Image (tube, rainbow, N blue to C red; front, side, top):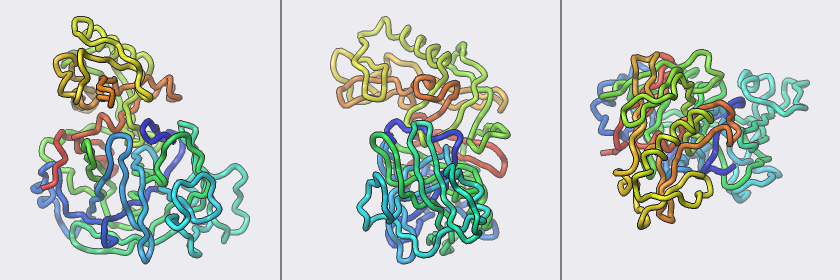
Length: 410
C-alpha cells in the first residue's frame, strides 16, 4: 500500500490499537491548539476520561508510536479514521512483512476464539469456518487500493495513562497480520479510528473508560490523536451532523463547494472524513468543476502547466521554483465546504489544505479525481485538508466538529 496516496477501504473493517510513548504509558496531559481551558473545564473524574497520542511524520507518513504487551514492545502504526481494525505484523511465517522478525508481535496463547463477539465484527477469509468454539478467529481485510492483510485476532494488555492520571492495564483486541499484500510503501501496522465494534475506540467505550469520541489535530509535522470528549468544548468549534446510517464511516451530507467565498455548481455532496487518505478526492463532475475554476484563474498568471508529480497529475511551475505554498498566494483562491443541513457549517480549505509544493519547486493540486482512483462517485476529505485543524468525531451525539488552529502544545 502506498502510504503517500492510500485510501482506506470503504467496505471493510480495521481494528485499531493505540499506544504510547516512552515508559510504556500513553501520556494524556498535553493540550494543543492552546485549548488548556477547554481541557480543564471538561476534566471530571466521575466521567469517562481521555488520553492523547503523539503523531509523528508528515503528510503521507503520519504514524503513531505505541507499545503492546507486558513487557511492552514498541510498534509503529499508520492512522486511519476510515477503518476499524488495528493490526500489527505477526511473528509467524510472514509474507512480505516489513519489520525484522524480532520486532514483530509474538502471540502467546492469547488468540481470540471464533465465538468471541468481536470475531463477528471483522471480515473473514472465504474458507473460514468456526467449527470448534476454541478455534482462533482469522481475519482478512481488503482495501480499495487492492492491498490486503490476513491474520489472526489476539487480545493483549495495553498500559494507558488517562487525563485523570489513572493508569490502566487495558485488555484490547487487535489483528496479528502474517500475510500483507500491498503495492509501494506502507506502514507495518494500522491504527483504525473508525466507529465499528472492533475498533479500539468502541472497545474502550464498551469498557466504560472513554466517551465514544475520537479526534485528531494534524500539523505539517506531527500532531496528536485523542480518545474521549476533552475537546468537545474547544473555543470556536463548529458541528455538522453525521449521516445515519453511514456504513461505519464518518460521513457528512449535503456539502456545497465555495470558491473564493462564492457558490459554485458543485452541490449536495456526501463526503467521508478519512485520515487513511493522504489527499482529498472528489467525484469526476465535482473535480472537473473545481479544476476548471482553478485553471481559469491561472490564465492571467505567469504559471505554466508542469510535469505531473508521481501522485499528483495537475501541477504548475512558476518563473522560479516555489519554496512553499506562501509563494503562490497571489495565484490561487481558498475553497470551502458548506454543509447546508447543518446550519451551513463551513469547513474552510485555505491554500495549504489543497495545494502541495513538490521538491522540484512546482505547485500541485492536492485534490484528485476519485473516479480514476477506484472510488467511483465517492468524495473523501484526506489528510491534506485536515492539517492545522482540530477535528472531533463525536459518536455519542452523531456529529463531527472542527476548528482551525496550529495544533500547538504549550
